[in-house]
Image (cartoon, rainbow, N blue to C red; front, side, top):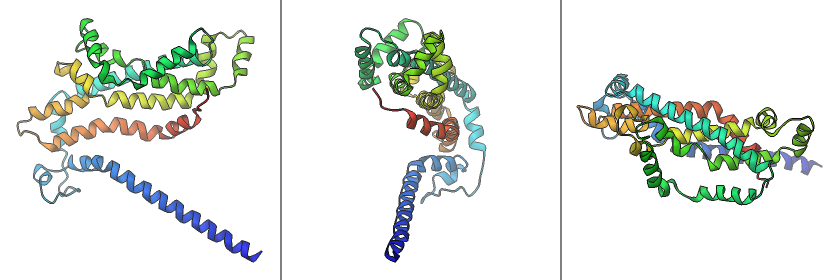
Length: 287
């Protein structure tokens, strides 16, 4: 009896030590991954003479907001921010709505060729965007959508990943809910938006975060489809204003612009991380 009691504290102590080691390891990995963001943040508050010193210094000796003023005024940075917000908002909203409707069809409705069509949608995930980049550009240009919000968003209004993610969750909802709703005279459209969508808030929220971050960080497509300065997005604007500075590539304003670009995505992730984790955890792999 005494031997068992002495073994339990040792086992608990071993578990606690293991948890501490794992958390310290994850903390170190997180710091390494976030190191570029930390350096960019502190560099944005440095005076030019301190940025190029060797050995480099992380913390600024003299804090200044001049870099943010230069970054905001050297080009229409507010317009860049507005373009990125509109583009990301349209893409996120469209992907969520279309993914909900397509996922409902693949999970609940029974129609000929359903499985084959779903496999075709999943197969599109293996096709890189660079492969269809030129056809998309030719189509958008032929429609006259260059330098427009339609051109920025049209190729990304539907997400195969969102269809797959939400379909997997819809399959976990008991079929009795659908049968009961049909008995009460509830049609497919009403059942989707009044019953299924409220039950799927976690998964829908998780996908919305993924969609927003992906749209916000786009670089190649906005670079090609836009030629006017007033239609550039924030990510393009950061690189664009480097050549317009009289002092050349001044890394202080560049880092200030980068911090402004990172901030919205970082705030979205920080405030919605619990819903993101819960949505992924609740999404099963049934079917």
